[in-house]
Length: 245
Image 1: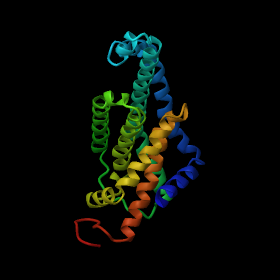
Image 2: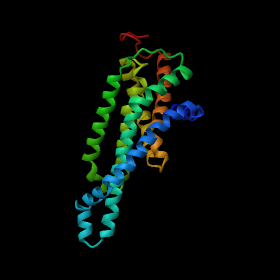
Image 3: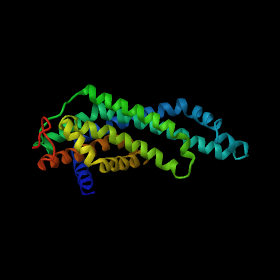
Image 4: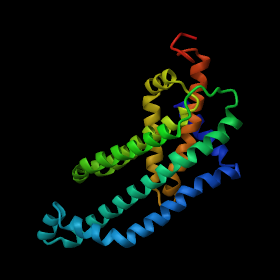
């Protein structure tokens, strides 16, 4: 918990740097344009499609068409919101996070050696594959959203998983060796997912939610680089070839 609070504190402090806001606002603006365009083009179609599918169709047949339409509209907006978040997340992971990482590592973690493999191809593949798995998981579990409680939990879970899968890897790819990444993933599995939940919850806040992917990248960079720094000071895993430090 202390490590997560430290990462959040440092992230808030980093927001005082004007340059970071250029990185944060970029994906949000693209997500807004995407959301507006998709809403105009597809929202009515999504609502109609949802109404025609059980259980909305059953609710409509029972005479509560207004309830069926309301649930269908909610489902349509959730689809558009998730798609917009996915677009912003991919832009952040592929384009924005590397810029943030360069800035923050030079200013906040200059003592942390870059011993990983800075591969744009690997990072992009990780982000795209995570997005594909996110979509599959989202669609497969969609019927479960109708179960009371799961309709709130599942969207948060999948966004949290996406945050963890994407940003934790990208934040450490340049600095951590394969051994270090595996050790950190083992040690910090729960904090990394918890941070993902926090950022996923932010994604559902009106307007502020569009900044969530960039803010998530910022928090994950601070958390992961500090965790790597402490790991190396503790000499837990190897730096190069698997030998104990």
